[in-house]
Length: 108
Image (cartoon, rainbow, N blue to C red; front, side, top):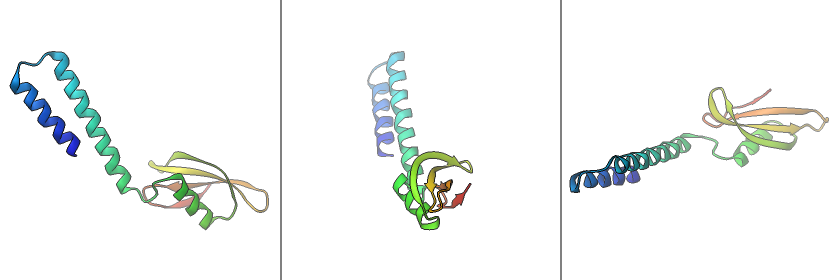
């Protein structure tokens, strides 16, 4: 948020100090857009209950016993999440989805 505010103040000072060229306006607008996206991403991460692959693996292994073969980011019920591929003690390969927003763990 501080970055976005700084960029707004910077762009205001550019506009009042001298007439701005179209390229300057575009550059400032682009910087503001990038700063706002970064801020939104940071806010979204703060709302997530599961913030890393390591946390997803811990949750999956706590609920389903087995050896982890692979972990990757995925979408779970429209939310950010993780897909964890496990090998059971019986030799069965199965997948577990971890919803990063809610922390729910479900087996496919």
